[in-house]
Length: 278
Image (tube, rainbow, N blue to C red; front, side, top):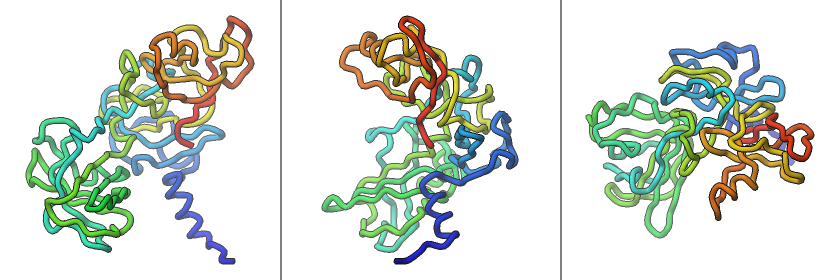
């Protein structure tokens, strides 16, 4: 039986959990930076709370510190589909060229150098060949010039796709465009709770796991016996499952955690064990 070295185990943990940082390294969990100090998605653990390094895609203002935030990037086939440019990809390649990413916006948007790092590329080839790879680098395109960007991925591709063939989609890091949840969750998914207000474009630690307080949309969760899980509601507030079903029939709300403490009939509890990204 082969035993992994310390270095190999570190690579496994970093791949699964993201870059690990102790609580005393650099930017603290309640501090905001106008410049990026860590890789987006880097993981910091503070006692039993977990944070991931994030960027505000719009100003996060009160009551953001006790409401759920979302990844505001649009990710659908109709807005993310693009072509594989020359020379295509061969087995063993880790670099490919794709037509300009537009994130659901006009094509003449810009992509900054390494803006996509920590995100994902998906490539569909012939005969259902498919690859999903982590993006580790990307070239820049300013207002659509050049018309293609070069993507570098973490692991080699294992099939051939000719230029102009197949389908390519790019996904930025889920912590690149963090914004406050809209009036209704509808098409949004929560990705954490900001510990402090954050200016547009600034960088911060987004709590994704562990004890926190989140306001409720309707009655406090836990006021009904045997309902302990909590779900994303309007404006980033919490809903119990019964309230979610009452608000809209046949919904499938996003579970974000559970109530930590005891509650009683008619008297709920907003102290939550957040469970989004460990």
